Amino acid sequence: MGSQVSTTWYIYSREENDEWSETPIASTLTREEDVNYHIGRFKQIVYKMSVGKLQNIRKIYLYHGWRVVKAVMEENELRLEFTDKTTAEKWWESDEECGVFSKEFDKKWKVRDGPSSSKITYDLLKD
Image 1 (tube, helix red, strand yellow):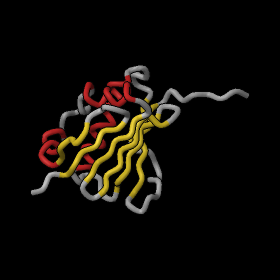
Image 2 (cartoon, rainbow, N blue to C red):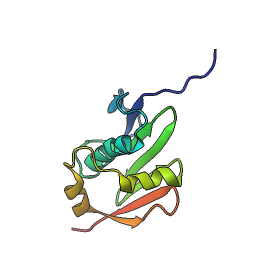
Image 3 (cartoon, rainbow, N blue to C red):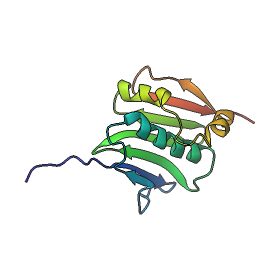
Image 4 (tube, rainbow, N blue to C red):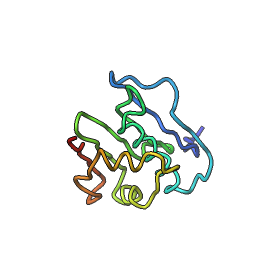
């Protein structure tokens, strides 16, 4: 029996106590090859977490057979860790799926460093 790579895209999360959430936040087979689409879906969940709309969630992961990106929110910092620089650049190319949280996100967070590597970091703005 050979190994099989999943064609399903999953978005998983961890709570503040670092426990995995019982079920994925989302999963889909739709547009399986469209990385920008899936980064956009992930972006919406990250924005939602970072503006306080996902209680107790502090880490979010996008998987497609393996981890594509991880988002970690700690006190005054939001870190995105991608598998590679090419995937990190997709963050800037992809629109938030529904465009609901981007304005609220932009009011609370400022990018510290862009995708010079496979990481992007945001700082929480002071009120």
